Length: 255
Image (cartoon, rainbow, N blue to C red; front, side, top):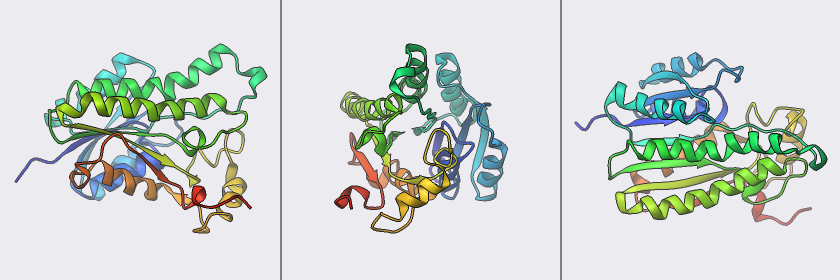
């Protein structure tokens, strides 16, 4: 029997990251559950769900703005299980800031998490991955990945930048057998999306969902399932792609 695969996931205390940890656990995977203390959700809840689903996990604090912390995060996989097969860069923040208030420090702080944090996660993981069968994936957004979003230009820029980063690293790391892909979620009901101040809020989610062909908002599990496929051996010939998971939003003309 081959040893269980090992994944590291940033931003895994809630939302898409937590749902993905549970999905991986259902296959018996070992998981390093990354979290940031500023996230009000308890990563131990994710760990409990992982254990209950038959997987094995450890909780690890990581600030993706800090290279040393990200290196230690990736190294934790080797310390616990001696290998690293999958890295998912999911950590991100969202702030609503009109252009007149989008000062350099505000701009830089968000990109440091949402874009450079992805680079740090991938760089650390690639240095510790075997040469064949490994996979890395980043979570972008339909905001930036497809559309613009007023008063959130720094967020959209970061999410658009992820797509270019993924394509470039897919070319660079392909000869080593490491695949690099990106998921582009549409309207997904997550704690971040429910933020009334910076994002859509519950009413905004419902309003957008009503206009989708599928007539519902996406769930964190919908994105987790897509990520699980792209990082699986079944997707062994898919790299450098950005998979749009939007409930048909971009398939229809606006009303």
